[in-house]
Length: 362
Image 1 (cartoon, helix red, strand yellow):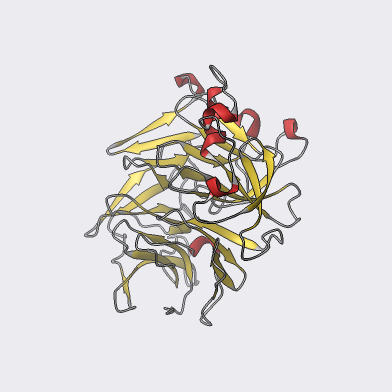
Image 2: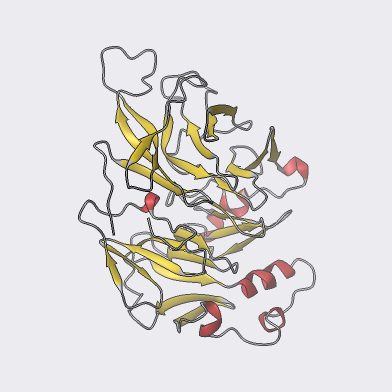
């Protein structure tokens, strides 16, 4: 293991398709609003990690935008571009936009109509589909916007898209992983408190083209990761302050629930007549599970440790299908009896835990 540090402090991390590691750093006296005089203000800067472990500061975006960038919003597109969210601190309403760095220079792209990324910290998550389209949560009916260069498509109820606010309402404030796009292009979003769930957090919602399906609606969802096989791994609990358990929604459960719209098959039919087994959930790992709903399991043991203690702070799915859990002072891969202790340079941060295409953990 190796550690790289700065004087400011990293606030977000992402990995490009070629394995390039990008981080956001806190930098004092950067991008101060024009009305602030003789006062310090905290800003951000984009850094690239080089092969020798050094960090290269990327040239400022001041030639296209005079504002700051959100410290926790950072994403790399399938073509290698790096995307940030511009913030409007001290600036007129409507100054929110996206900043794109293509390796040579910056471009400022206005956000979709009704978009407000600045008001809820890291809860306006950015993610890319397999076709390279950028998805964001938009504050309009329907709640989704898609960017295909050069413009936005906003999905609303008027377009025939059922609003995701039924029954979830506003997005959850419990997690920054608000939006995740699966390999098939479908979207997973976190729900929030709703009257229909009598105060529960709202579970997780799946948008697969024209309609929504929901899962574990009585649960608070804290972490979300989608494995290459389509299984969805969640950190969840029923009461927000109780231990967070590890759950998995299998592809069979998703297929069966989506089919309920037309000709609902049973889980057995969706799984070619065979009930899911522990070995089907994560190949090569014998998991002890408790079935919450057909095809949806709570994982209690991975053969190496008890997983019911609920001390996971993030979940990441590796490109090889492995599932990694970030904990207070170490991280683990399900099925391995090795606990990787975090370097002494610092403690792990949930917005900066990623697995590169070559399997390296950052």
